[in-house]
Length: 549
Picture 1 (cartoon, rainbow, N blue to C red):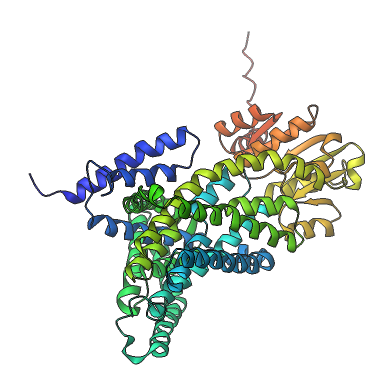
Picture 2 (picture 1 turned 30 degrees about the vertical axis):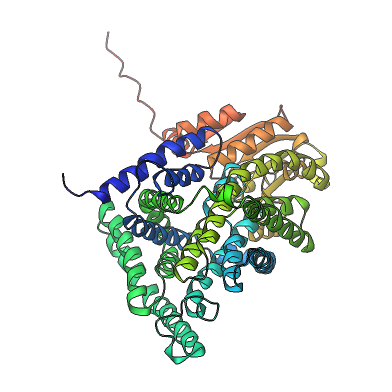
């Protein structure tokens, strides 16, 4: 039989990840937990089959590259700038507080301060996968709470990228393995590292920003999806490998910049969709390989240390985030959402732990505690959000404000002021009192200047619907593009006003079924309405000629 350890590792990893991921999903847990447990099963600390210990880290490295590429691809400077006044200082202070707590626990366990810094940094950063999935399930991504949480996460991710770059250069000072080029002294080593990073960033911003979009557009014009998908993957992996080979920076940083540059292209959404299956597959292998490093006996060997680690992640970080959001005079609903969102750790924590062990900064026990803290916090996080869903009903009721003036009489409510919503608003302007619900600040300003009464916020939130006076609305026009968000809005609108006529936009027959099931009176498909308009302008059938008698 041929030596097939690569195939066996991939088959065992993906196969068990599917089994345990499906089981976790059935138990209403994040599938990430199933992937980590699959790794524990094929790891060296449990009986039975053991996957190749040399191949697994290389597969995990590809997973890291594709994960960081995805982070860069979804990185939005615009979204970050919209919430920068709270997300940037909030994330920085929360990272610092969690790091201090991690250093305190590390010192209590007898580790050095360098190990404590790596340990604390690993505990400070939340999982992108877990956070986004929790927000998406509750339709919170486009809300004020969701934007702040995502912006906060972006700042955390950027801080961890910086940590990954600087830790190798500072490892000698922190008590770990000095870098290979440390003969010139610490300052020289640090200057060389920063110089390489600056050179790489300059190269990507000057050359990459021109070349990468140009390549994508040229390949897109060939009309071949296969070539386009291959081009995106080649750019991602090529930039990651080239950045390490030519500039000495990490694969992770190279992949992040490749994604960030590609995000500026008009084809970024297509690039994200085309590479998603491969990114998901290697992300699974990444989490499986992380699970392989976990020694379950640490739960019995160091129960108090595990408990302290989990308390820092779930309680310590959450309380700091909660206090910071309230300090910025944001509503309690925002503070609760942010604190629940950040009460877990994930991908970057694993990457930092692996780097810390490789630099001999972090002991193996520290990595085990990080992995235990990640698994347990990810298990606890859905319970926190379930509690949050119940608590939010009371919290939002207290935060609700008085309805706008037009809501005191029978009126129409329009949700969304995009291309469709703008046409609807203009058509209704002189026919009935109208209240427009719009989430984007620029559009809300445009609406007010045009003379409309506006409620700024996301209509998924019950308090926003209450402010628009939904109980007295005769008609509700839901013009948001997402059918899932529209379904949630319609469901709440129907519950608040059983007699209102609710009209929504749809894209497919499946959307129509979903929206009508949620309570829409009418769900209109654009193509069908265009066809109906064309047929109204079509020539009438000529009467048959009279027959001679």
